[in-house]
Length: 190
Image (cartoon, rainbow, N blue to C red; front, side, top):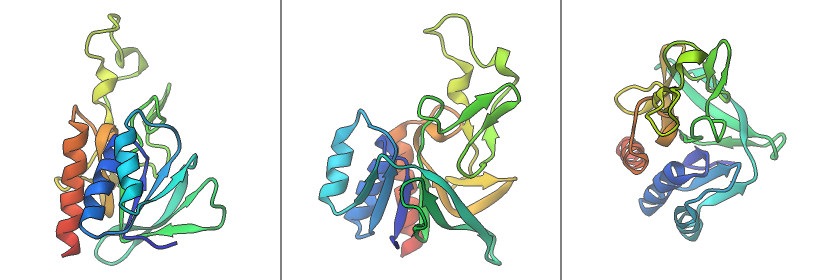
C-alpha cells in the first residue's frame, strides 16, 4: 500500500502532523496501536481522508542506503502480514515508556521498532528521583534527531524518517514538534 506519509503512532503528535499534511494534499496513513486521549485529531484525520490502522503496530521496516544517505523504504505491521506500507516520508511518534515508544532494561534504553539512537544518562538507579511529582530524569530521554527532526540510527541520519512528540529527547511541546515535522515534509515535497 502506498501513501505520501506513513505515521507510526496514533497519538496527538502523529495525528496533528497528519492533519496538517492532509490539508496540503498529502495522503497519510497512521498505524495506531492503542487508544489516545486526544480523539479530536483522530476524528479530523479520518474526516480529511486519512487511512487509520487501529489496533496495529509497526514491527519493523527496511532501511536502504540510496547513495545520498540512508532512508526508510517500507514498514510492516503486526496485523497486515505480508503487506508493506510504502511512502516517501515517515513520522515516528510512538511516545515514550508508557506507550512502549522507548523500552528500558538494566543495560539501557532502546527504541524498539528501528533501533534509533536514544539519548539518556546514567543507569537505572539515576533515571528517577524519589519524589513522584518532581521532574523525573527519564522524561528528558528520547530519540536523537538532526535539526530537521530526522532520526539517527548508528549516528547516521535517516533522510525520510522524522520524529515528533514525546519520543524526542528533551522536553518538547508535542503540537509544536508535530507542526515542525509537517512543515519539513511540506517543504521537501515542493
